[in-house]
Structure formats: C-alpha cells, structure tokens
Image (cartoon, rainbow, N blue to C red):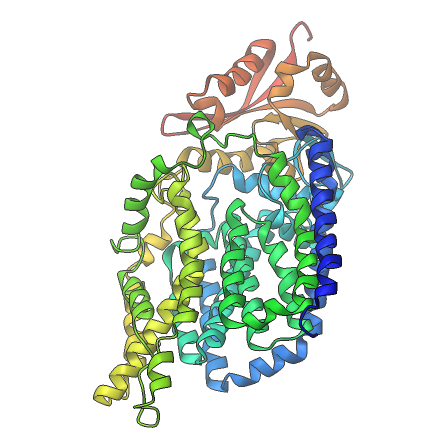
Length: 581
C-alpha cells in the first residue's frame, strides 16, 4: 500500500476519534458495578474473537512461516526442538507440580471454568454441579485480566475443568516460549547460533522452570508478549499486509494477561521505529492499528472499572517512587547473587549488550561493517523490552522479588534477557574462534551452561515453605472434597477449588449475610451443608475470622475430618440448624 495521502488523514483520524468516543461513552455512562456486569460477557466474547483472528493470521501467514523455517538449518531445527522438549520435561518432572500463589491460581481456574461452561468471566461465589451440568448463582467479576483464564477455558471445554489440564498447558507454554526465544533471536540478529544459545539459556532459568509447573498467569503473559514482539519482528523483516495483520491481532491479545502486559507496546513500537521506519508513512499501518484499538477497547474498560481496588497496597498507593530504592536493590541483586538466578546467564547478558559481531577475514576493514557490527538498533529494542518489564516493578508496592511469591514477576523480563544472553554467547564464541582458532568453543560454552544450571536443580525441585499454610489447606481440602456426599454443599472461603473438583460450594460469608438464603440452602441440599474450616480461619485477619466464628456460633457442628499443619487446623464440619433434631 502506498504512503498515506493528505486527503486520507482526516477520514482515518475520524475512525480513531469514533473509537475513542465510544470508549469514553461506555466508561462514563455506567458505574463500576455496571461495567463489571457487562464485562462478564463482553470480555470473553472479545477474547474469543481475538483468538479466532490469531488462528486466521497464522493460516494466512503459513507460507511465510514455512519460508522462515527453511532458513534454519536442519541441525539447528533438531537442536532447538530438543531444547524445547527438554525444557517441557524439566518443567514437568523436576519442578514440583504445585500452586505457588494462593489463592489466585484457584481463582484463575474457576474463571476459566465459568468462561468454558457459562461464557461468562468471573469467580463463582456459589455454584456447583447438577447432573453433570455446571451452574453458578453468584458470579463476581475479578480484578485480574481474563487472558489466562480464557486460555485455560479452551482445554476445559474439551476435557472438562481440572487442575491437571492447566498444569499441562503451562508446561506446553514453557516449550512454546523456548521456540519464541529462538526464532526472535534468529530473526533479530540474523544468526541461528544466537537463537540457539538464547533458547538454551531461557530453558534453564530456575524460576521459569518452577513457575511453568504451576497454574499462574505469568508464563502465558510472558509467552504472548514474546509472540507479539516476534510477530512485529517478522513484519519488520518481511513487510506486508498479512504479517501486519498477524502482529495487530497478537498485540491486543497480549495486553490481557497481566496489568503490565500493555508495556508490550514499547518494544513493538520501537521495532517499527528502528527497523521499519518507512511503515510509519504508510496508510495500511494506521488502518491495521485500528484493529489493535478496537480489540483492546474492552480491556481498557476493564482497567477503568477495577481502578479503585487497592490490591492490598498500603493506603491504596500501588505505584510510588518511595518503593524504588528497596525494590531496585533486591531486583538488581537477583540477577547477580547466583542463589536463585545463574550468574553465568547474567554475564552472557552483559556480553550480549556490549559485544559487537566479530569481523571475519572476508569483512575485516569495512567501515560499514565496523559501524553495524554492534547491532545497536536490535539491542536497543531488546533492552527496552527487558527494562520495561523489569523496571515497572521497581515502583510497585509489591514489586520486590523477595516480596512473598512475587519473584514470579521476573518471568516477564526473561525473554529479552535470554535473547541478549544468547547473542552474548554467540558473540564471545565467535571471537574466541576467530582469535584462537578454538574449534570446540561453542560446545564448551554449551556444556558450561548445562553444568552451571545443574547446580540449581535442588532449588528448582524444592516446594519451599512460602505459602505453606495455604498449600496445606489446598492439599487437605482435596481429601475433604472426597468426603462430601452427593447433593451436599460446602461453605468455604475458596469455593473455586471445590467447584473445580465437581462439588457444590459457596462463600462462608453467605452464612453471615443472608439467614434466609441459608435456610433455602438447607432445604435444597439434602446431602447436607458442610463448613470448611480453612487457612483464612487461622490467619490474623479479624474480618475473615469473623465469618468462621459466626458459622461455628450459629450452627450445631459435627466434625467429619480434621488435619493439622504446624500451628494451623483444617477441619470439615457438617452443619445443622440449631433447634432441630
């Protein structure tokens, strides 16, 4: 398509203005509660449309992908496939298969269950299974974006809701991420060895392996940010309508996994600016970008609707410069201390930033080669990508990698880190080969990377004591669920995990807030009403403890099964109304 003509600027600008006006009208015409009610069905609908467009984009670009694949030698194809398969196997069988962020992972899975069965996004506060048909009577819209729950809903639709399906999906996401690192490194630096070293480094990052065997949102958030950037790289290298379409449908989908995912725009925009600046003068660029805005609009309304939630921040202040000093010292040392992250990988990263491509005999002496060998455009893009997803957490109240389980936030920066480290490995081995004629330098570095990573395997295998109380609660709740008779209901702080196990469940707060509804539940569930005395009944939270105390005070209880873990008690009670035999 030709450069944009002056007479076309106004009509295209009007289209953007219409989308902007629609967003403003939607956001300001309803209060937050009404917006959330609308987003329950709008969000999964738009995600489904967006996902269909991504599949369409893949089909349209199949020929281009085939040609890119042919540019990779057969040897490199085999090696990267082995790295990807090895990464998946390590995530499945070395890292423990556990939840690490409670109870967010249960919420993600339940939201995915609701999308799969009801075409509605939200966490169910009262629902269950009736003759094999899932239902939810109280659906609450969740503050987190719905990208990961939507992905989970896809296997749930085919195989039914289960923790196992979500675990396996994250394992496979890890393998796909390794391939994305390889192809991005290969395309952006023009050498498959840079891609191979990057894929190897990425596949062995300890926290990446640990979190890829959970049901957390971060692995998928990192993957789709990487896919969006890779699609823009493909477009920059092979300009055309089809690759541009592919990039423009991947970018808004990538936004919808975590709050910071919108920062994907920074490396994507910088890619166009530095590697394909002529596209900024073309009409098609702005027409296709309308698709990005339209698909991202419901997510922007989501951000607006949940903006008032405090997320547990002190005084509701989520982002502030006062968090910078502490978070910077922790998050910078994370890459340097060599206790959770291999120092060798960090050294390769700095080599990747600082080293040029070493000139060979054929290219030595060329002024152009000396200037371009540093590849400053490519490195600037990758550094911007890394700094965006590493730097945003420096001013976030819970952004420290030592803050609970929030080391998971580091996963968002691993792809650009590994791609630059891969280039560092490629550049240093090429220099050693040219300088000392060391034929086995590549194999030696590969062996060093593997041996260095091997020392982190005990850490990767460890469950760690982080969130031990909630993890024990989850483990014992699974046993309790098996004790529940048919046509019964359990009151719990975490109904999502019982609903995923095919049980009827409701929030404990129901017993406090609505006595009439409790009477209805006793009449409806002839198998009995049960109470799950859980993690939240043990912690020092007066509000949560009050729900547990109210239930134990208002109803007669019979202990069904109980467990103890350190100083916490986990009990399943059967409830009876007082004054009844």
